[in-house]
Length: 297
Image 1 (cartoon, rainbow, N blue to C red):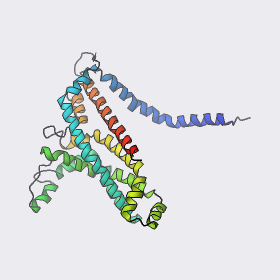
Image 2 (cartoon, rainbow, N blue to C red; image 1 turned 120 degrees about the horizontal axis):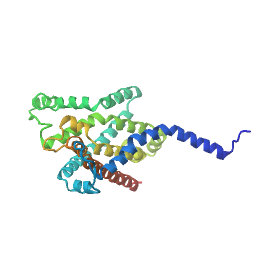
Image 3 (spheres, one colour; image 1 turned 90 degrees about the vertical axis):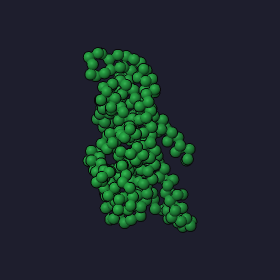
Image 4 (cartoon, rainbow, N blue to C red; image 1 turned 180 degrees about the horizontal axis):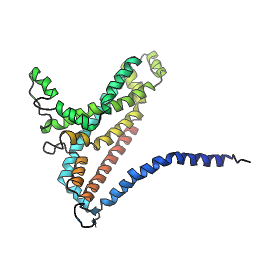
């Protein structure tokens, strides 16, 4: 006789769940958790990979050095500048695009949605080469439009004041499609009865957006903001392809400094310590975002 008691069925269900999750957990342990713990251990050692000397345990010395390193401070400030410029712009423009696309017909919406998402399919190397040409001071696309208008040519990538905004503009063009799709899906999932009830009560379109649509999008906004902040703190490819950290290290972000420390200066332990400090910065910003969004409920 087959035992179909609730306890036995529940045990089989849990076993099936773990079986389905096993491939992901194995890959997570191999490619995320394992390297993470290895990096934590490495940050406690002085290890120069070009020398034959064994790794030397130095405790928290790498962290103390990183906290006093002026290049870490400069790279962190460049990263924060990128985050402050890129994240609000991405959220605002993606939401604006999503609201606009939600108002057009389904047939036209599919076309514009695909067009907005198309840049997201390109690799960072292709995007970098393309935008280096756009930003070229002598024969670039943007200066070709500015000169006929009587405006001076802009040294987009060699001017300290323009280099970081240029990277942010490129990033917006490249990544805006992802959060736009998330916002559009969230808007389309809001029941039309909510808007109809507000309209019957006399609410105008702007009032419906601010009082009905936007509050219902708050979980999606929180998700997008956290993901954008985490991704922006790890910016590397765009900077590496366009400016290589210049001019005058004004665009060298923390991840690029970690890359230079590990693979150009070969100081693996010190690079691991800076990586963990970056992890702590991202964690603090993410917790702050969650707390701020909860206070608005």
